[in-house]
Amino acid sequence: MSNNLNHDLETKIIHCGHNADSSTGALASPIYQTATFAAKSVEHFEELCRDFGYVYTRECNPNLTELELKLAMLENAESAIVSTSGMGAITSTILALVKSGDHIVSSDGIFSHTKLFMNELLGKFGVEVTFVDATNYINVKNALKNNTKLVYIESPLNPTLDLVDIKSISEVAHENKSLVIVDSTFGTPIIQKPIDLGADIVVHSLTKFINGHGDTLGGAAIGSKEIIDLIKWPSLPCFTGASLPPMSAWMIMRGMKTLDMRMKKHCENALTVAEYLSNRDDIEIVKYPALKSHPQYDLCQRQMNGFGGGMVSFKLKNEINGLTRDEASRKMINGLKLCTIATSLGEEHTLVQMNGENLIRLAIGLESAKDIINDLEQALENLV
Ligand SMILES: Cc1ncc(COP(=O)(O)O)c(C=O)c1O
Image (cartoon, rainbow, N blue to C red; front, side, top):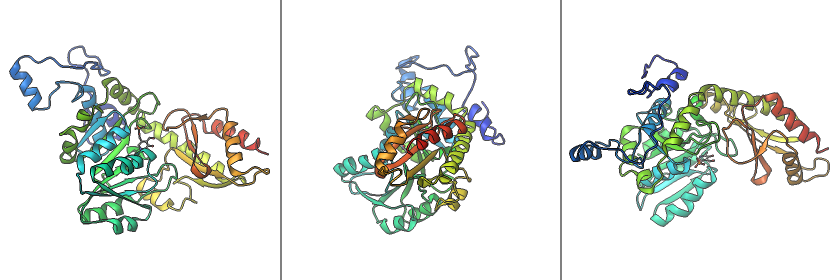
């Protein structure tokens, strides 16, 4: 196992937490496809239960441990816990940290299911949530109360691709003794590291860029050992049954080994597509954090190391060839031949989805940028 701090990230992603199998020498990690683990004696069983050893896969499993070590390393954090999906990780983290009577300040415009969870479910347990436009950190500061336990933000936001200033928000939240959770799914640790910027917990949908192949779900919460231990025990993924299956952990680890190079290609493709779209007369607005026209371009340079990520959102102009924006957007999307109409993101395929107010969201894949652009061009040219 190499946890050499001098190694570059690409090297550490591959080696951290990994050993060749001690009994067979298998270099790829075996998949521990087992529900239960045998103990040598009653006393050994008791010891395993006491010391969080491997007892039962809903509680822990070696494939999950290896993935958790790699994720903690990637985010420059001490510890991580994985779960069945991004939503599994987000709900487990929030439920573990709040109690009845607590208050949460959340960024508006977050992933719709996270917002639904906060709106529909947390209220039932006596937790109050205030949603604010967190693209201006002063709005977060003004919404903090004595009982604000958590500040929950996402950056870049889905689907508007607006940014939230993680450092400034962490500073004002900490003055109020509130913990900061950042959903960094769109950023990935290759582009932005919320813990380094002052956040307490990072959550990810591993389903997206980190796995990168659109073939399994997964999620994670990452932070200090003290905070992650609160989520591990009482272990919410364990008690709610939202534990990650070993096969999924293994698949995510395999995908993750190429995260660095994939993410750079997603960003390169996305910037090329965003520049192409912003040079067209029939497009009203293109949202991409690394475009100079993005209102938070400077924040992208500071917070995302100048990378814009793999997502591009845009809106067509109204009245293209007598079509309303809604008609033209539908016709354009239905005319795409390479890009697939589908939700999700961070896969090798380019995916397209229309959101409210005809905002078209492209999850840019790993195909050639030229081919993605040619597909968009033929669909746009067919509108006239
Ligand atoms: C920003 C963001 N966070 C969390 C999630 C939830 O992840 P999962 O689908 O793995 O539960 C999604 C899903 O699209 C997302 O886009």
